[in-house]
Image (cartoon, rainbow, N blue to C red; front, top):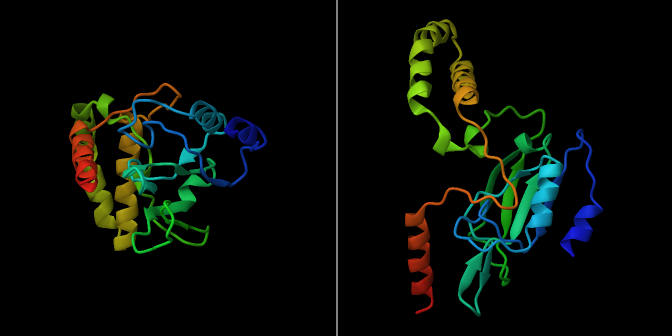
Length: 205
């Protein structure tokens, strides 16, 4: 049982850990088309307890049942708080043919010696509650200061890093991360869900 296995794994705040498993758990956190949450309570409680982050890119299927002509997201990867920023470029290897129902999942682990600009889109932000007017006004007020600072920076890479930090600081002021719990019903794009249903129905023909 997943509850028993997770109970054996206790992390401290300093550990850098990646946990990957076919959890066979269904939740809208990683699969927006899910409305019937199954076998996910223990998993989400454990993830929240240890402040882990989902590595998967949401709504990308990792499992395909050829007998029932259906797809799902069963294979999940989570990283501890100190490890999350070291994980980049999670994706499905579409060229791999394993003859199994599960997709091959790839991602990059960035070491301390590798300097990359963090992708702010990795975080799960609650975009529905953002006051975009205040967000824009704040950027406009700080625009002149940013331009002056940018003109003093000679390195193109340093300019990109500085501009990224300015945007991230503004995001911290006006955009808040989603709080995920077992009963969360996250934002769904109904148009994408209907497109997925149409595609799935055509696969069955």
